[in-house]
Image 1 (cartoon, rainbow, N blue to C red):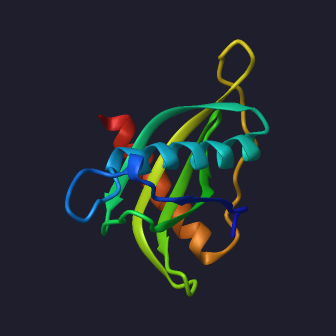
Image 2 (cartoon, rainbow, N blue to C red; image 1 turned 90 degrees about the horizontal axis):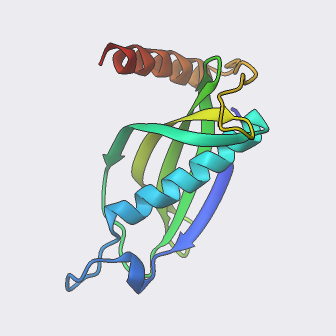
Length: 147
């Protein structure tokens, strides 16, 4: 698998709505996704990056006040200047068991000091999972370009 970038958060009151059982705001987890995804993209591109789009974002289940959120980001595809990063978010129980609550695909572009796009090294998938992700990323790219 490609290198994994991991981030960990504890859901605090300021991250939640006001329901009886405070639930993590979707926008908060989206912000965390953008950060951990950008770190993975920056590491891969060895340059600054900017977010182009969140191509796919699925909320599978809720996270609540005091939950531990673990996010894992990995590059799944590269173009000439762009990178797709998959970010999986989990609620981690105190015993270490994890439940995935979110998956997102975020597209970044590598940029130079003048905010101009710069080439990135090609991503070469090696495992069966990486090949499947790479092919799915190419399909998502074709859909984006067709819009």
